[in-house]
Image (cartoon, rainbow, N blue to C red):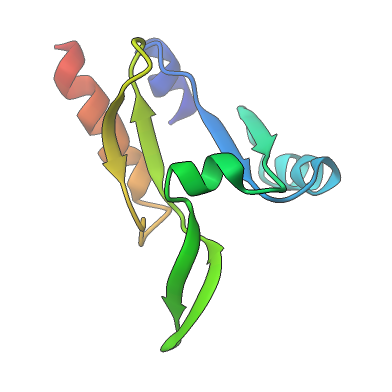
Length: 103
């Protein structure tokens, strides 16, 4: 779906606390066409609530919280999808939201 996002002028960035070598391996394995940013201190991720407390198998832990933040050209958050449950279906939902404002 990356091409569809590009047609709408969307810039996609991924971010995780993993290092550059880990990101490159992930990019190569999954043929990722967009930039992955490293945030080892989790400063940006915590600001966007993408790292913090979460429940996993009934136990509270700290870790990455899969989410999507749509930031408009003005730098303001347009929509925040917190705790994305299904990564495979999620891009279609984001694309639908972007298309709804471009029509």
